[in-house]
Length: 142
Image (cartoon, rainbow, N blue to C red; front, side, top):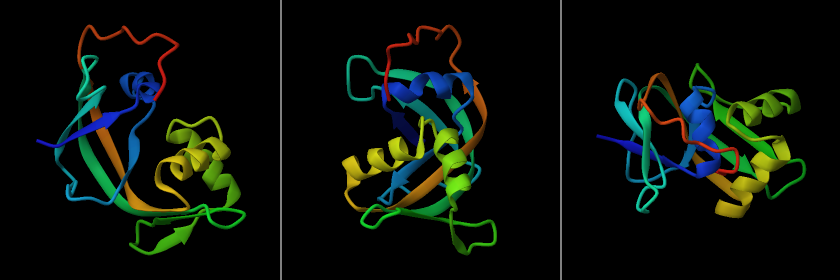
């Protein structure tokens, strides 16, 4: 069964149900609509915790270009055609994805992946938290 691992700074938002999406680089694993997914933090460490399970409802292609100013973010629309996010949409999108600002969002991807990122946005619903896991302190980070 597929799983997604998150940095500690996103664990609280996932556990609370506030964060319902993630952006991942294209890779071998193909996530599919309708699949049950296990959401973790700290995988492959002694601090590994299962946050809960959810059902994938959408997988869309996304491209983040940080090699120009202003940066360009394109995402696959519901009609399958990619569109470029405007400043207001990008601000809302970044916050919805758990970042404090567009700059925080763009810097995160630039630091991890360089000037151009191509990947997928994976969205879920029906989050089922693991009971008794309220031990997220305010100092944890993604």
